[in-house]
Length: 129
Image 1 (tube, helix red, strand yellow):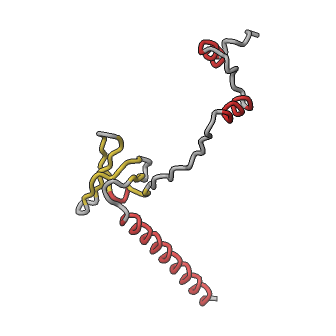
Image 2: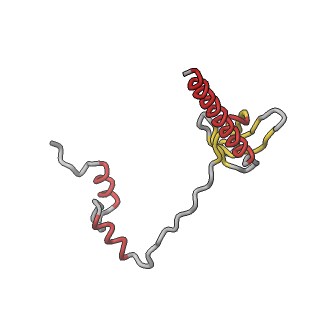
Image 3: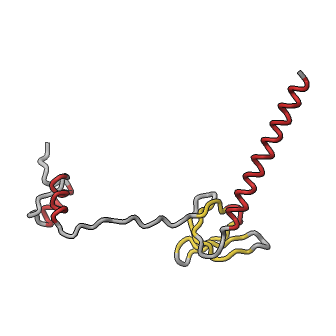
């Protein structure tokens, strides 16, 4: 019985060290991708672009929006944001398909004036109940 407990304890310790090693490798891989110009997300939800890095003090300067900078600890950056690939949008050669889409949905009459459209969208064309 004692041998079984020691074996279970050994397996538990082994799994704990293995999980820590994987997390450390993943963090190292992530930090190797850090470079100026890379879009990242911090652990507290800020999105920005890396402007500069200070390896001696483990600081990263992020540009949150043009002219707005934030300095965060290097470990606070938890995710590299990759630019989404542009989806190919199929554009028809003629406008015939646009008429079919307009008829299928709850769109307005094509002869509707802009003023009538505004009234319809604001719900002013409905009678008061």
